[in-house]
Image (cartoon, rainbow, N blue to C red; front, side, top):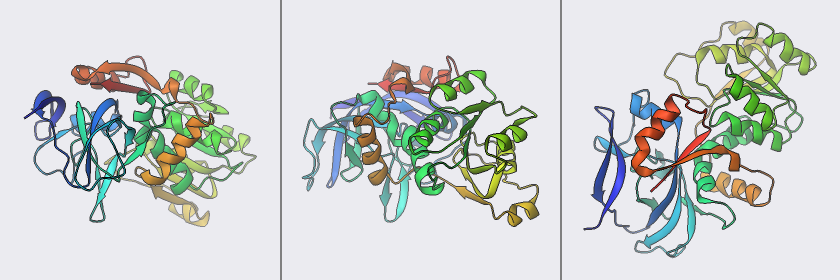
Length: 337
């Protein structure tokens, strides 16, 4: 049986190993994809450090990687929509019996030379979009897109805030500008992140430790506050701060993941102002991916600056370490088998 290289996480010990494993064979309704690029996400770091644990994984080891692009290598029985050589982006998850399984978490992902996908969990990648850019769209771009267009329901000219301008937050700033939000306020303790936010379209970038933050937000929103605030940091104090600057009927959308309790200090004020807190996870891939690819292909969006480095698959552990230490302040690192 043909072998391939894969970066596998042994969940009980949280050990990432590069292993030779059998190349998977596509079953009925499945497609085998030759991986061309796979993104390295903070979620991968959290799986390795133990902050996150797979809920639906069968067994104790999984190939990481939920941001994947490549070319069709083989198709399984009954698959007619795809043929070898087609460029594709894999969805970051699949629905099985009404339950969403996350690629690279609940089943094997794309930190490998080949990856399996259900035939209906892929989207064509236009020739004009490089594999590296295509790979990061299923999470780093489509998750904020879903948070903005679905969970947050942001309207044109609405004042918005983004807390945490990392791998997802920086794209949220770009996307919010693209849908016509105004002003777009970015909040991050890192000066580099704040500069990056301004470079991609934020109207204002504030330090979360700034004692004048509340006053400044009120000022730039004409005293109203933010119609929507997005927490990409997953940090409890961020949520408290974001709620404190929400407008009446404003929404706080929780995108960053944390296992810490969610609290609202002034519950009476929160209820009186009819504010809302909404949890968000991923995106509606069959809708979001084609939309985003069309906007990129049409020149409305450009994520070429989001690929901060490309490393060989054999250096997966190095990529994780660089992201964890924020070495060079990467937006997204990409692995190439």
